[in-house]
Image 1 (tube, rainbow, N blue to C red):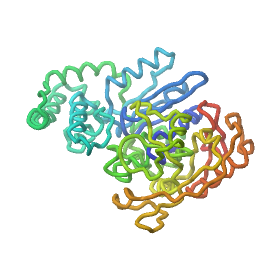
Image 2: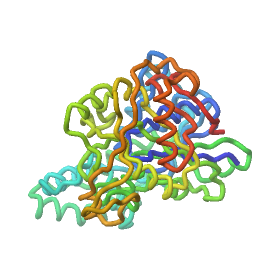
Image 3: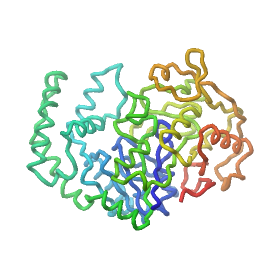
Image 4: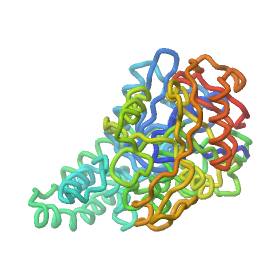
Length: 427
């Protein structure tokens, strides 16, 4: 039962799409298990670049079945638009499966997300404004709308009424906004039912049967470990569990069926949105990383904050996810630096700390302790094996591997599908 979890080991945007796509030809199913269209993957195939937001990266592999699991929140308009865009480019999307238990992002979720964030002002979280958080909140409050509800108008109407009872009070009396009409929401949601129907399935059953038949199933996380609602830099996190445990709850596949957990690490560190970031750079090096790495959010369009590699975070990701391997991405971006600093520990109140502090206050005040590693100037984008890399690049990879606590089994040396060095097979 070869089930693999592939997830971000930092704050997201590590290059998970490329890693998933690399495995696509050997994988039978690729499953998104959490998040929504607040995540984004860029996959480069030949001279074609694909920006995916809600769909699993496996959608680009003709032999793979892409699955949107029950742990995902789905904006129907975004999903249908994304499918249409791929179809226009000749991509076959007919194999897609969507869990009937996945929750729907409605127009009122988007409205609540945006007005709440504006209301918070300086205390805002930095959400994408796409309704993700409010949808998960309704799920937990048991007033959410699920995909299967689109096929029972009576139940759908009752659920929308229950959700808007409180939300309209909040919108009108607290935020001075117009109330949202129940009938209008119901009509819009029902309009998606027929279009989504060919894709809706009992994905829990499908995936477990696939594993029993020795099919290869890859679980693809959105965002990253440090954005996990339980294990991230709370409250500056997402509203779901991108960590490995989320793959089980977000898909209905038990933990005993997971055989490998792969963490995606960028050769430096980035994050989007507010929150602490110990190695963040505000100088020319930070600007260079952003420019050379093309560090702009696939979904948000926001510039990513950039900093040096943080081994403390990498060790933490190894621990909370039970990582068996790392995929190191964007090593080529570091070409040209004479010395490359790596954060090996933090200084907090004058004390050296080598593990991620559990206290939000301590992490906010953490200062990076750096070790400088020799850089390289040679072009590495044509490297096909680890031995092809310059000696200093090899030493950099080995140092990161030792500091992070799990073997680096693949290295991205360029944005292209074929610009990857595979050291150990993931399968």
